[in-house]
Every structure is written in C-alpha cells, then in structure tokens.
Amino acid sequence: MPLLTIGSAAYDTLETPFGFRDRSLGGSGVYASFAASFFTESRLIGVVGGDWNPAYTELLRSRGVDLEGLEIRSNEKTTYWSGRYFVDMNRRETLCFEGNAMSGTYIPIVPDSYKNAPYVFLGNGSPVTDMALLDSIAKPKLVVADTMDFYINGMKKELLELLRRIDGLILNDEESIQLTGARGALDAAEKILEMGPKFVVIKRGEYGAMFISSDEIYLTPAYPTRRVVDPTGAGDSFAGALMGSLAESGELTPESAKKALLYATVVASFTVEGFSLERLQTATRADIDARVAEFKRALV
Amino acid sequence: MPLLTIGSAAYDTLETPFGFRDRSLGGSGVYASFAASFFTESRLIGVVGGDWNPAYTELLRSRGVDLEGLEIRSNEKTTYWSGRYFVDMNRRETLCFEGNAMSGTYIPIVPDSYKNAPYVFLGNGSPVTDMALLDSIAKPKLVVADTMDFYINGMKKELLELLRRIDGLILNDEESIQLTGARGALDAAEKILEMGPKFVVIKRGEYGAMFISSDEIYLTPAYPTRRVVDPTGAGDSFAGALMGSLAESGELTPESAKKALLYATVVASFTVEGFSLERLQTATRADIDARVAEFKRALV
Image 1: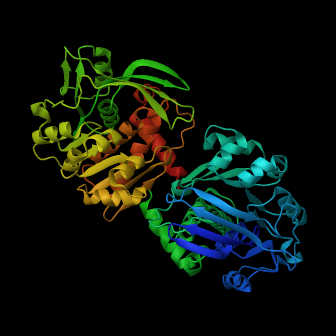
Image 2: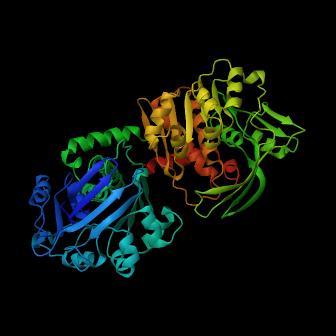
Image 3: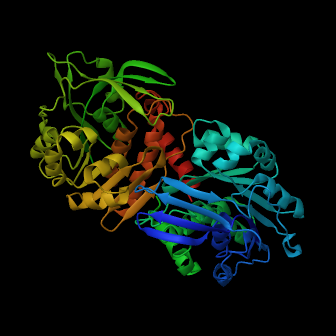
C-alpha cells in the first residue's frame, strides 16, 4: 500500500573523516521517501526553494518517488544544513542550519491524490506542520512520526498533542529519555506508550533498535558496517525503510514488525556507506534482500 | 566436557541506586564458574585468605562448583573490592581495591584432577598467572581468556605473549580499542585475530555482544532488562556461561557459538537483577532456558 512521507528536502554540506560534499542531496523527507521506495509506492510532501537542483528531482524520480507533493517556492531558498563529523563518527557538530522554505510555519499543500494515503510517515519536522497534514488525510491506516531534540525542547506542547494522533513514534534513545525523563530506553518507551502511540521504535545507532508495544518487544542489533563514510540520513532512511516495509506487508503483525526492523537496519547500513544517497542509489532490492539474508545468518 | 576456570574469589562491597551490600560474594572466578555450572562440570582455581567465609564455599558447592582448586592461605586476606555505581549504572567508581592473596605474583596450585581439563577459561587476572596455569594443563581443547584495562595498560608484553597461547579472547569494546588502537570494535577484533586468538567476543554491555573469527561474525543484542539492580559480575557471568555452553556443546561450530552467545546474554541478565549472586542463585536451568526461548521470540 502507498506510503506518504512528509519531511525536509535539503542541501547538506558534509565533512567526515572520509571527505567533503558541498550542497549534496539531503533532508529527512528525501532519505525516508527514497528508502521506502524499495518496498512500496512512495510519495513525498515537502517544500524547496527556487534554488532547487532539478537533478535531485530526477534522482528521486529514478527510484519512483512520487514528487507531486514537492512544492517549489521560487522566491525562497531550500533548507540548508552543514555539519562536520568527528573521528569517532558518533559525534557531529552543526556548522550552519537555515530552515528557509521549510520553516516552523510551513503548512503543506496536499495534492488530492495523496488524501487517501493509507500509510503516513511524519519525518523529522514541526509537529504543527505534521498536524496540519493529518487534518488533510481522510482515514489513514497507520500514522508514524519521527521526532528530535529540537521539537522535544522547543515545541513540547504541540508534540504531546501530535502524540495523541499517531500510532507509532520513532526516535533515538537520548531523545526518548529527553522526552520522558525516564532512566533508560525501556522505561522511556513505556512512558511514551502512555502518551498516545501504540508502539515505539527506539533507534540506537551502531547498537541496533527496539520495537516496543504494550505487550511486545522486538530487538535487532545493527548491521556490522566496517566503513561508515557518512552517518547523515541513517536514522531517516531507517525510518523510511521501516515504514515502506510495513506498507508493503499491509498489516502490523509480529512478523511484519520484525521484518520491517530488519529491512530498516539493512537500508540504513547502505546509507552510511557513502555520502548523501550515493551508496543507497546504487543498491537494488536484490542487494538489500541479500544483505538481509546475510544479516540473519549472523544473528543468534 | 568439564570447564576449568581460573579467576578471583573476592569480597565485594557494593553500592548502587538500589541498595548496599557489605562483603558480598564476588570475583571473576566466582561469577564465571557459577555461571558455567548451569551447563557443564565447573571447576575453579583461585586463592582466598584465612578470612574466607565458609558459607560462600557452600553457596558455590550447592551449584556443584568443584572447589578442589580453591586454595586457602590462612595467613593472608581475601581479595577485596568496593565500588559505587552512579545513577545511570554504566559508570562506577572503585572506592577500594586490595589484591591480597590473589596479587600479581600469584602462581596457582593445580590439582592433578584438573590437569587434563579440556576447556579452560582464564578469567580476569594477571597474564603471568594465566600462563603459569597453562604450563600445567596437558592438552586443552579450547582456551579462552578475558582481560581488562588494568592488564592492557600495565602488562601489555605479558598479555601479548598470552594471546599467542589462547584460542579466544573475551573483552569489552573500550578494552578492544585500548588494546589495538583501532577505530571501532570490528577493526579491533580483526587486529586481535592477528595477535593469536582464533576468535574474539566483544561485550557491549546493555547493547549486546559480537563473536568474530576470520570468516564469521555472530551478533546478539542484550536481553532487555527492566531493572538493573547491580551490574557487578555481568561480564564475568557472561563469559562463564559462554564457556559453559561451549563445553556442553563439546565443539565449536556456528550453531554452538550462537547458542553460547544466547546463553551468555541471558545468564548475565539474571546476574544484574540482584546484588552479587543473589538472583542467579535462585535461577534454574529451566528458568534460563525459558528466558532464552522468550529472548529468541523477540529477536528479528
């Protein structure tokens, strides 16, 4: 079933121990919709400026990402982020961030063809924008959001309101603790379940991920990547692949949840092997399936 | 097949956010041999002082741990450690450490009945002591050592000599990086394989563990423990259960390695649910097997 993703389409200027990229393709919506496209019809809602590079539109279209919902505001600029990773790659610093077209006040324009979307993924973005989108969608089957420290700290009230309207929340372990004040990720997940979502997916970077509902828990280690070139977009492509796989399965069962965690883990592992989408865009579904099979053989 | 463990038998004075214990039973050899006893005949070599509490001997014997190799030096004192855990439980501080009977110069007395031990586990201790033990063992089938920062920093030369005489090394991720100067755990494991061992097991605490040989890698997340009461001995009981399970299997195969990782993970999860051996000593093999089955259902 089709998946509708809302999130940023951005220019990322990146520096890691392996190199440098100027204004490469990035953004939570881009990574997530691209990752989802391996599994299901993938539609993106977002906004860019008049400086948007049409080659990036082509790159997304080449994987079948539907961009009818990508608004171009010619008198604004595209979201821009630049950052530098440290040698250990688990730490990074933001050198510059400009929300530009996708600022806190952005209210999405939703094409009619998107309004019956059964699967909705609210990528990292303002909870106000996310709720405006949900107001336009008829009766989604599954709505999942990602969030981050910026909104937990700056828009807590709106975020809590959003949590009551979604089925699942994806976030990393520090964010889960920030949001709840809990001592550990498991306690945090339980508190988040009380805030509205029926399930929580906690991302732990190089240590894997957990899917937690009131009566289930599923665990995966990370794929053991030997050479992380650029961690940017790992979490967004993890989330996009998770949602794409759930949409492909068409229902949420223990089996589909586990499969989605596996695919999410493996797709994220491709993402970090190159800058921007460079590695992921050379991967095929067969490559992903082969790595999933290899990964499963390594699991206890 | 029987497993021979060498390691410390000690008094631990512990403070965690959940309480306090004065001179409770501890030590790498104690935790490891106790954990191994669920799977195989378990024999312990170590030394304690005249102040040793005979009730602790009984506690170990009640699980069938063979203590013929536990030397009592009446004119010395038992190894003593006291430490305090911080609220996040991943960090602790040592308040006091006295090697006492088991100091750097300790050379073990090996009972004749131990000299044909097929499986040997060298728990956290001096590499000089470990090599003296190996000199007394006829032809072991599998020798695995644990090590820690103290020996990596203070006895590097002796440790490297020991590495050429063992089949496997168990250590945590920071230690693997300390030992090799590698950037990450996978690179570290590869460098350790060049130092002698045929396999490396890297412990990552609440994030699981990895088994790595030149052509294999097996992964497990940690068991999702809700209430860590006292992390002391988690790594030692992980290693002891791993060795006990390998000894029970009787050969090192992909299946036996994975099974050993699973048992190690689950036994460590029991250990941390109570102070000292309090929780583990109430567990049965059936409890362990039931938790392994539950854990497997949670894995992707």
